[in-house]
Structure formats: structure tokens, C-alpha cells
Image (cartoon, rainbow, N blue to C red):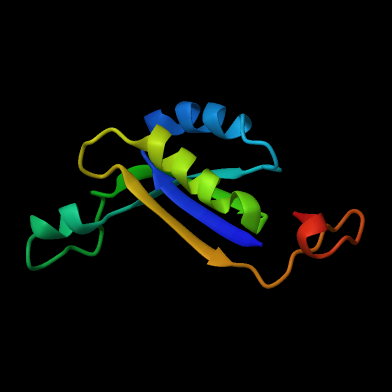
Length: 113
């Protein structure tokens, strides 16, 4: 089992979601509105940062937990449909999951994903 976490531009969410809906074996995703900063902010920032920093960039976080067999396709799909070619398109991270439990049925492992 794998975890996929992607940070993308908000206006690309519809394109990414429609493309992910077409993937066989994908059981779902969670979307959260988030804010943060990356390298581009650090390059032009002042040496002293005030306590009330308000220059965060809005992004959408997508969390997907899937079977190993489709993780590459999930990542490729997000990368393709979130791409604009501009700075700050986002990031995609993956890692292995140790366990999963479906609370309603008690299923464990890949059956729970």
C-alpha cells in the first residue's frame, strides 16, 4: 500500500479530479485547502520575517491511499493534469503504508484501502 500526497494549484483541482476518476482501482481521495510557501518565496524574502507572516500561497492538498499496482499511474496522472509550466505547480510525495483498517467492517491491509 502507498500514500500519495500532492500539493497543487487550486484552479487545477477539477482537471486532476476528473482524470483520477477515470483510474480503475482508485478507491478515493481527500482534498484540503492549505497555505504555505516554498523556494520561490525564500529567494526574494527579507532577512527578517515578521511574526504575522501573511504572504502564504494557497494550494490544494490531495491525499490518496492506494494499492502498489496503481501508485505510478496516480502520480503520473496528477503530474500531467496539475502541470501549468509556471513556477509553483506543486509537489507530489509518496511513501509506503504500514497498515490500513476500515473502521466500518474491520477489514485490514489492502482490502481496507
